Length: 361
Length: 175
Image (cartoon, rainbow over the protein chains, first blue to last red):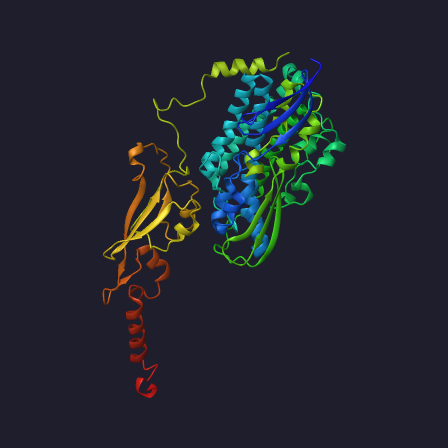
């Protein structure tokens, strides 16, 4: 009981079905410190991107990650458009926002669902996943696939919403709203959830700033940082929404921030459907990409996503590099986990919503 | 106390949410991106589908007698992104909503959409030219449909004859 020993956790299925390996120094049941090691799902995607042309890379970047699979191509397209000076039609920009927000709702519901599963509350996990199916139906019905929407293309979007689709999406959102409200109620009041998640994995604001965390992890620790508000892209400037944040910085408040954001996303989609002007969805098809550099950033479900692109004037990028939110967030696990119980490790890992396939690509 | 019990009771009452597939039909949306299909009559062999295919699933192979090209999209390499269908100028390639893609291991090397696209023939001399389906004639050859069906050589000749007959260029003087 008195000595410290090292507990290997992972690399398989720590919280989500993604590999992540920890060397955890424990004393009894209490975590003293941890070492992270990465690289289990490195697929060399940045190198693959340099071997494919600009149009093929729209598809490649979509396959970096499954849960934020629309944020990657849309940010990549924004970087290419910034470099080539392409104007995206207004309707296409609204359609991009809709695709992003649909993915955000599904991603956040997935994460809070997994949290219930890790708490041991499997019936709530099943319920959250069933509610998420409403959004999966939207994706399949409007875009044609449950995960990879294929919504973006350089210079615009690939799909349009007609009157029939508009009614379909609105119907699904109406169906979703009471469920979201109900789930939020359960997560705020259920004694089982509260007991396991409040005060666990606390990340104080000072530490959050030191690690430079982003997304719901930062917002739950009192940093109201959202790229959609700070540097609005697409049409977020014309849309009405608040940055959801909290000051407690524990596992519970991160889940609640995500649920509130999902509610906001529903309203954002509705606003888009209402305000969206008629017009073209794509202007130019095959644009020459000049020599130069460009960056673009956006708010993915997990936080700020950043793309850097360098072109030498050929039809293949000279360098394509992206920084994903999990890269900063998982370093903060060191603070969150110190002093926690061994049983809380998966819960804390899940609370940063890690996306290993994005980070290691 | 335990606010979830209400939801639990409701979900129990509702019964299963999943479709009883394969014992009963399941719903497939019209826009679902499934197996790619080519309409050989519409294809102009421009090759943009192969250019944008991130997976390299699309191949063209010239026929030995030079009468056309064999188009092939391997379903097992395809990522069902639909980029080929999006960029196809004549909408010859499209994503059907057929997702029944299971097949035997021995069929692995034949599991592809294979179509033979015939090359066009010059209306004048019969030389081989790119295919000229109606869709592309309407789009690009609407002004001079007859001339659009010719090979470059015959096209030049017709243009020259046309110009000479209207005495735009006096052949004698030019010499």
